[in-house]
Image 1: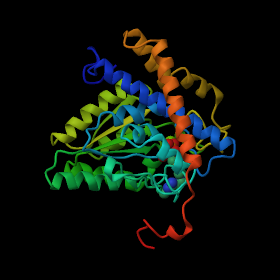
Image 2: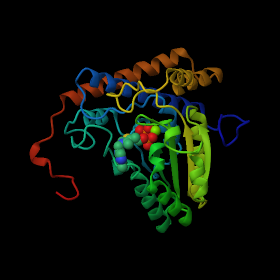
Image 3: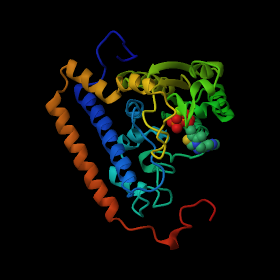
Length: 330
Ligand SMILES: Cc1ncc(C[n+]2csc(CCOP(=O)(O)OP(=O)(O)O)c2C)c(N)n1
Ligand SMILES: [Mg+2]
């Protein structure tokens, strides 16, 4: 389904739909590999599971133009990848090597940014990426550049004052900002019912005067359709949008967390809605791709990730003498 024309055909070309599938598969493959490296004692730092989030990170990121900026968070591996951050650089970061995105400063997605790719590094303090993205959006507006800023935020992070303050300011200034709320039902071990007395986080956007909607976060077509409308609205002066993408965090918060506190039937229910399997079924049904092609994509992703692991493991460790480089206040 797509939100631009729910009854009509997918507005994407077949080639674009196959690209989206490739990015989702690459995200899944890289995530699985990072998890297995960590379990083998070959990984470092935080390993935040991406499983279940692939439709959101890829679908939303795919709606951006090359000059737009994005400030992703810790479950948006797909967005980093499709914006041009390679598995090799990401894995080198994950393993703390000098060739990693942040040159071995932090062995996870924190701080992974590259302004040449229009990716603002993820600010660990949640949801600090929101005001940073708003700042970028307001700068575009001030300079009269037709560019958009997109950022991502979790359900837990939406309980902070800064979430509301950012939306309020964005609405007042009609800033070209797109906020994707990844409602994955948990913040660490706290279920959504213990976080807030409302059902839908989109209400918080509406309350601040931001155009807001709810979508199925496991349907990449829906995510991409809604994000495309929001990006077009922002670019044409129509102001900010909040998209609440409902999904489920399928593993623990990070991989040290077995998520025993999540009811098994809840996971079972969402497993049947796996975003990658669903998209493959859609592409099969629409005659866009088939199992043979899916097998080839999976093999290609596996090979790309294997070569990235070799690159990362053969890379040098950061030189301790450089520890003060690249920090704002040494
Ligand atoms: C200001 C701040 N407080 C606490 C943390 C620690 N922390 C990291 S992730 C996380 C949970 C965030 O939950 P949510 O926003 O729902 O995102 P999810 O991890 O579920 O994708 C917390 C509390 C943090 N990063 N920043
Ligand atoms: Mg959450």
